[in-house]
Length: 520
Ligand SMILES: *Cc1c(COP(=O)(O)O)cnc(C)c1O
Image 1: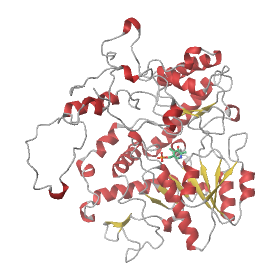
Image 2: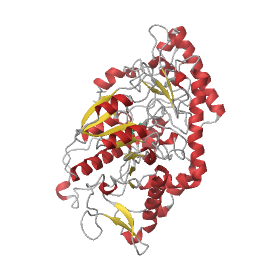
Image 3: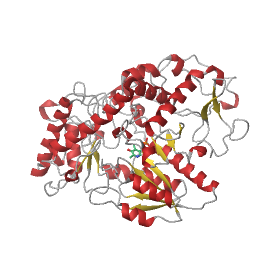
Image 4: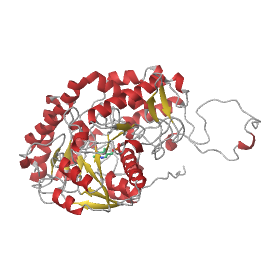
């Protein structure tokens, strides 16, 4: 093994690698822009340093921290390390490469204007421990974004610090717990519909509640009668996603909220799909007490590599006193203050503590505020309208070849749901999704929501053009026909990806997470 980057396919990569076949084989295993890439540990060597340092005979500065054994990290030069990660990144798919129809995730274009604003040194270089008086601009961004989130949702206040949707759910449920505790109420059941995002029951359990499932109707909505029948003195509240994970509007939400309130509970709304209704419906008008907003979905901040996201939680009048610390509060002097303590002159007596060390995801706040201000009220309403229009276009153009379980109940919201009904014997949703990789698209969300067999959840978002949608639809039509006809080649797709079909069950159950060096 040399210290220089020996990129290329090696026999031990096995069948899973895109090994060259027949006359098309290359010496290296690379295929033009398609480059194979070993692990960093295989490229570099621990006894080799990528940088020339002067020999130091014992460091007086290191003192007791002086290492006794080598670090065992591969010594690589800067260009070797940079190329490694750049090559790997080219095997990935990104929203900047093409349509990314991952349902429930809202993978839409992030406007470059927002990136530019977030990179302005006055915002980008702010330190979380900088004295209040030196960061009035940053506090103003938090305060102004908070204002618009409250305005758009029709709620009383907002907790800005949660760092993702699921983190926001936890914040909302802790606020509900704090409100119940404040009135000495021991209720401990949270009702969650069957079609809920997996984070909902997980959050409720994590926050110490007991979770009970509420069934869905044949129309893909919460069974309102079943939910109301279950209400009682031990029900702390409900968690309802609206629009729900079938891509449908929960039209009974107001009725449900009134019943929950009458029974002494609170209404948590999973607002991750706010993208579909922003500028058109205010959750506060539907009786919601707490709702997280995924800035990385609705307000188009990057999801990049799984984070950072931002999940501010809007709160009703009833829950507003129980928001976590810290928060921004305008003083009478026109100066913005960051309230860090629960006691004292700047009181926040109901605050249940902190969701994170500092103020939340500042870079996401800057981007989201730029997005909101550049769109304006009419632009935001158009964005949600276009998201719904695009999803319905996909739904209606594909329902002749893919079964749409709720297609007959009317239009969908921001995502179109299909099932594997009608596929040839032995063909599954997974086969179609793998075929989509060969066609150059990221697969849609599969096998979720659980209420539909072999679910395929397609969320095109508003940032796709009609031409882009037509191309995707044509690929999906072709794949749907192949799945119906039982085209054997689909069972072994993807054929053109860096890796062929991998054993996903084994990868999940018995992952090989440790690299062991091979001699030689
Ligand atoms: C994305 C999503 C979440 C979780 O949001 P994260 O930011 O990934 O934690 C929760 N509920 C629904 C309906 C979602 O779509």
